[in-house]
Structures are given as C-alpha cells and as structure tokens.
Image (tube, rainbow, N blue to C red; front, side):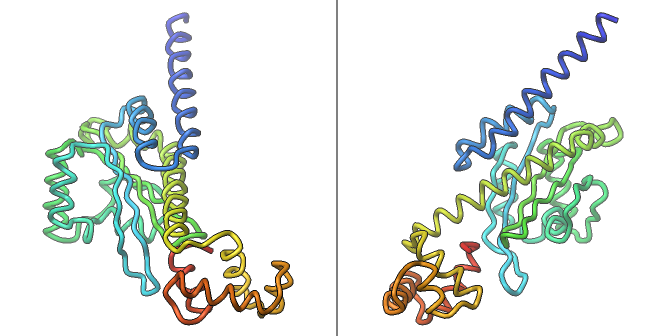
Amino acid sequence: MYFKKEIGSKMQDRLEEVLSAVNGLGQCAHDIELYPLLRRIFLRLQTTSFIFSTFQLNANGHAAGYRFLVGCNPEWIQIYQHRHWYSNDPYLQYARFNASPALGSSIQLSSAGQREMHATARQYGFRSNLVVPAHSRLTSLVGMLHVANDVEIEEGGEQRLFEWQALFRAISMSLLDVRVAAQRSSLVAKFELDERDLSALRLVLDGEPAQVVAKSLGLSVASIYTMYSKINDKMGVNRINEAVRLAQQHDLL
C-alpha cells in the first residue's frame, strides 16, 4: 500500500510540474523563451520529439509562411525543409481541416512522397506520432503540434502519447497564441501603427463613416481624414479600405 501511495505521489508531482510549465507558456514572447519550457514538459511526458508548425492561409485558402519550432534531431528538420516536404505533409494537411488530435497511424499516406517522408522520419525517432491542430477564429494562422516517441506502435507508443492528448491540446493552443501575438507585434511595428490607428481601422471595418470614427476617437472629421492618409502611407496603399483589408490579412484587427 505504501509503495502505491509513493508511486501516486510521484505521478502527482510530475503532473503538477508539467501543468506549471504549460501555464508558463503564455508568458513567453518568442521561441527562445518557449523552448526550455517545452523541453521540460515533453521530457516529463516521455515524448522524445516535437515540432510546432504554423502556416498562414490566404484569401484563396493557399498555405504559405511556414514556421517551425523544433525539438527533435536537427538533421531531420534539415532534410524535411530541404525537400520541401511541408508542402505535402499529410499531418499538416490534416491540421488544416481538422481540430481534433489524431494518431499518426490514422492519417492516410496518399503519395510516394508522403511515404518516403514517413519512412525517413522513422529513422530519426518518429516511430509513434500524435498530431494536435490549433485553430482560432481570430486569426488565419493555423498551428500544429506534432509529438512523437521512438516506441513502436505495437509496443504502445501511440497509446502513451494519446493518454496526454488533453495536455497536448492545451500546449498547441498556447503556442499558437504566442505565435499570433508575436506576429501581430512585429507587423504593428513594421507598419508603425499605434493603438489609435488600429482603433480607426476597426471602426472602418465595422462600416462606420468618418463622422462616427471622429466621435469615437474624440477628433475632428478633418483629423480623421488626415489620420487615414497617414495610415495609407504607412501601409503602402491608396485607400483606407485597402489598409483595412491588408490589416485583416495580417490578423491585426
């Protein structure tokens, strides 16, 4: 009985440490801060490899702007990127259209290129896999946490991963939130927009005329048109409606 209590206590301590680290993810501003927390989390969850991927969906539904936060053998990600496997990655394709976690074995490999990618990944420790998508209504950025271990499926490798799928979902969403916030901050700085500029763009997005925008911001109508002109210059467009569309595309509103 004492032995069982001791085991239970150790598991509880491990879970509390993991939850504390997960809660800390949201306080990170960039990948450099995220990485040591993630390594601690996945070490405790006996997950030997992870990759967090994001990509942007444009108005036509095409994916672009792939970014990767990598916690696996660096040689694997070099091969993956060199061969542009991200453009045909079945796991990324799954994440694009689905929100629920999925075992790697449940995702069909439909081409020779995908089968080659899968076979190569196995050589670098990706024996059992779990795919955890991350979606938000507030952004066109899609995230996917891919976690893996070097245990064969038949020996319970996938089952070990799936037991923690609720935690992996929380991690995936936290990572997407951090990536969205970092992207937004970078683009706001790039376009040199301040909070008043963004407020004006949001009001224009809502269809409000200049008179209402002026009243909301405590400015004259003439000042609002001057603001529109400055915003257009900052964003390299000719009309305020074009500035709004550009801000929407970059998830600034």
